[in-house]
Amino acid sequence: MKIAERIETTMAAAIASGQGGIAPSKLAAALEYAVTPGGARIRPTILTSVAMACGDDHPALTNTAAVALEVIHCASLVHDDLPCFDDAAMRRGKPALHLAFSEPLAVLTGDSLIIMAFQLLARTAPADRALALIDILGTRTGMPFGICAGQGWESEDQIDLSAYHQAKTGALFIAATQMGAVAAGQDAEPWEELGARIGEAFQVADDLRDALCDEATLGKPAGQDDLHGRPNAVAALGVAGAVSRFDDILSGAIASIPACPGEAALAQMVRAYADKLVPDGARSRRTVPGE
Amino acid sequence: MKIAERIETTMAAAIASGQGGIAPSKLAAALEYAVTPGGARIRPTILTSVAMACGDDHPALTNTAAVALEVIHCASLVHDDLPCFDDAAMRRGKPALHLAFSEPLAVLTGDSLIIMAFQLLARTAPADRALALIDILGTRTGMPFGICAGQGWESEDQIDLSAYHQAKTGALFIAATQMGAVAAGQDAEPWEELGARIGEAFQVADDLRDALCDEATLGKPAGQDDLHGRPNAVAALGVAGAVSRFDDILSGAIASIPACPGEAALAQMVRAYADKLVPDGARSRRTVPGE
Image 1 (cartoon, rainbow over the protein chains, first blue to last red):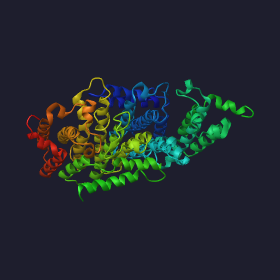
Image 2: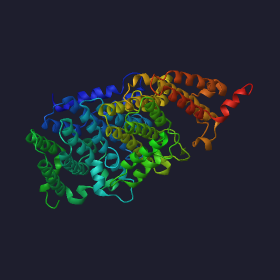
Image 3: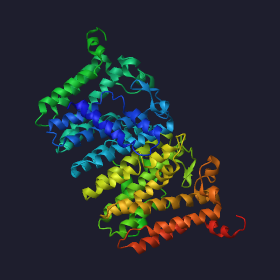
Image 4: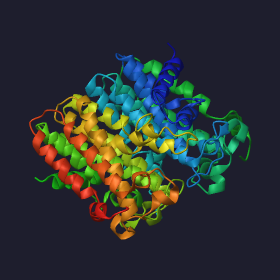
């Protein structure tokens, strides 16, 4: 089964598990709305790819870990879009959940999805791997090092930029590589660097897309970094400089892949995925003089 | 060590675990604000009492389970108080968290506490009990049967009142009795009824307090059920009728306690705790003619 099929099949079963019995129908529908359409599913794809590179001896556990991670990511998007944060109107080409449903249902959808992620993992085996996966997912999601911490930095008067980026963007990529390894019975620690570097590359690619793509391509408003005065690699380095930075980080990421049976295939996957992240215009614009 | 001391010591360590390292300071402070002062800690006290009645052979696991449950309860209070839900100004005698900090920090505090609850359990042993505890806590917190579902019912046009009350109030009491049993190595299933009945009794007692107590006693505005037209046992049965209903439910709760070494002591604890729940004025008012 292809990775995308593994993820979508497992995701559909997970959402159905939250909708069974006598449940409030709007919240049940909102759970599904929050996780579809899937977008690139980049974090669960990385997780599954790492697990496969490590032998993937418990594929059902890998699938659950991948979906638990994506469910957490979707929960974070729903809460980040709330009026008190980004007040976003669009997400993945459709109205943000708090507009399609309501603000109370958006808060509850995020909460329910966070809970679902941990519960899915609690129902897997072997037990030692399941507990390690829950611990990693919690560390990279909550306080003091996870995406909640990353979002929390935006309420501080003085921001530790390194801690901010690592928590806000890096954390779930570190979760992806570490959970992939642990799902396949390997240690988490050697896989942290790959996740952190993919996270950095993703952040630079996101800055390029925000600067170069229009709303139709992004599925959300463009030019938001400029608008909100957020730190941005394109503002700091220009388009060409940001592309160079992206390529450097990517090389470092691939060099950091720990020795494993599927090392070469994993390197190829990371490179192929990375190519898709950089918007079409970015590389051609490198030749424009004075850019 | 007394139950209250076990809970507060473990709670303090749990919150510290979410504040370590380079963390955003306001969110770190908000975590602590959300769980203190502790109030009655009724759910973790029930959990610990059930575990002790069942032998409490892994007290550290019991303590963590109790605190994980209370942390989830505190998270739910923070999110329930948000402007889009109850828009509450006060909680436990001090400003609601979104007023003391901010609305973004209130959303993130709830999220971080939910995550913390599961992560605390993932770091305990034995592994099989830890996973079972996470599964129960998730079931009674998320969708379709947990407190999120309970809150979700309030967005429906047609409310299933039985499912609503069971999820909104009963769920965390069922979690309390079941998690206490599982922490001590017993099956969860026989303990569901005790939790459900304590939840019903608690709901009636809450209705009595809402109708009879003032804001200073409650630590939050009084008369809210009347104001919001919520279903309320006092409105349906009068004060005397609600007290009778409370006593009936309590008898049923005590009768439902499964056979276990500490059955008698547990029954005594439930009765003593229940006495504290009914506001002073309620029983004396039973003698007033025409009430």
